[in-house]
Image (cartoon, rainbow, N blue to C red):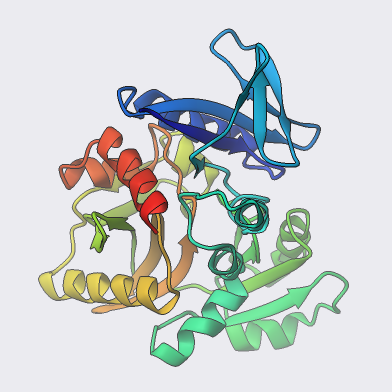
Length: 325
């Protein structure tokens, strides 16, 4: 008997359109012989199941079901394809867990921690994970440029504490540009991070739970045509994403070990992608993506392909791991 799978997509953040693309990729690649897939749009103004005729069927928020032609549809598992709030920050997952519904992401607490860049950095430092120097600010804090730049230096990055797809991120080269970068980041979040620039090799690596074990996928080297791996570089082709990465054997070994340790220390499950800058032979953790992009242009699907894992296998495994956990 087929399992009913709700694929949640959309969300309430700037990443809504990217999430809809990711969710549709999941819908198109699920094994139709094993799963009955239902695209569910979670938007600020409505929660609806959108059928093949683009007809919308409201979701009952009391039990997360929908009714089609008088028949009530219950779901066996929820595939989380919401980037940003409320899917990647754990809020929607807490709701699902209250209802007793299985989902493909890590538990809501782990999702909340990893979505908060400052909290993730604080959590990992005691485990010996190397990170960049950073300065944390809340909206309304006085901006002391001299103090910030004495600690962080130039160039530096200013980014929302909670967010993705590089929305609100700026690379600051000159002191006079810092205030504008801070203002841009605060448009995305009321908390921001200012991080030192690390001069090294930028990489990204998928870490997943595959057949019950932690699996590190082939590493991707990122060479952006822009100042950094921004939105245009990620989604509009303005970068080279080289898999496998052009790194040494010792660098690769260190990245794999560090990636596995991060996944274990944070007690994660499901799909994830970790970003690093390699300085010398040492990987410096930048951030964790717990609902990584799975559009046709995204890194994780390309890494899975390089590992010999099809999208059908990748998504089906995520569902089976969720159901069995």
